Amino acid sequence: MIQDPTIWRAVFTGTTPLNLIAAVTQSLADRTPIPRDPSRIPGPARDRMTVHTRHVPAPDIAFALERRVSALAARHRPASAAPPPPLSPSPRRTR
Image 1 (cartoon, one colour):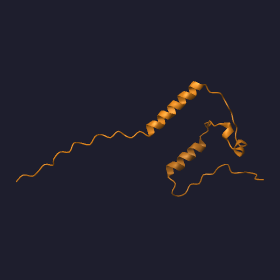
Image 2: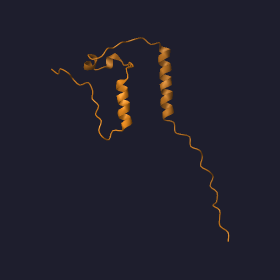
Image 3: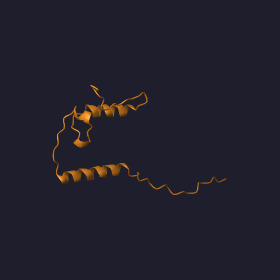
Image 4: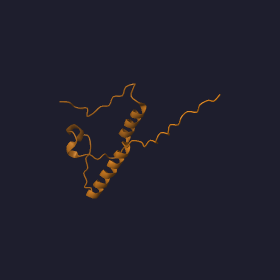
């Protein structure tokens, strides 16, 4: 029987971007609770954490979903490019 099973592991190499390492480290240090569906948490992980459930009103969920969808849609909108300037004939040299 495994006494201390590894739940997950992250490996960074010398080519891992520093901003990614910083983001992962910051996320791991954040003490804010992470909302998760208790039925989807693997067994070994459940033994190492405290799970609290609470009921959230449906309108709050709908608002959060709308906000998330809007944020994702904004990330994937193509940037509106200015129309190219009209082509004009190049000035000619006179003699």
